[in-house]
Image (cartoon, rainbow, N blue to C red; front, side, top):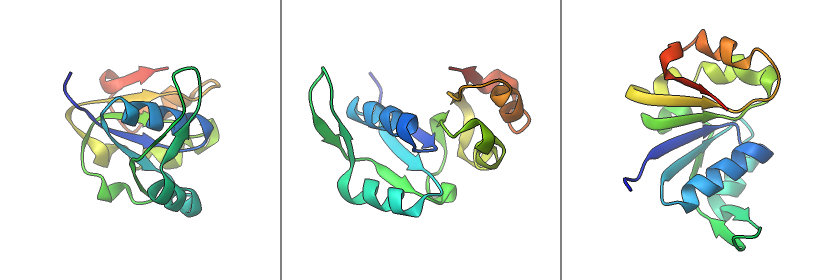
Length: 126
């Protein structure tokens, strides 16, 4: 399987789990968040996965500046629904012609608000 370059925008509980699992699968993963202390901790210590598949620490790249990342094959938007507009401003810079965006917020309306910043054909709703 070909390695993908993936950005996870929003690294709270769900975003961190997605980032760690995707990184553990061998992909190049970038965690993007405005929470500097969390980004610093991810950079220094990685993300810890614990569960039925075993306990491990996954090292990924992390930043508060989406411009550091470049374009990605997949962008996972994992912010809280109320933060979708601010997160959406960073997404277009992460996209190349074949990129896909997966939104994983709970609640209604997040995908529609994200689609205002990117074309709906690129958007997957999780």
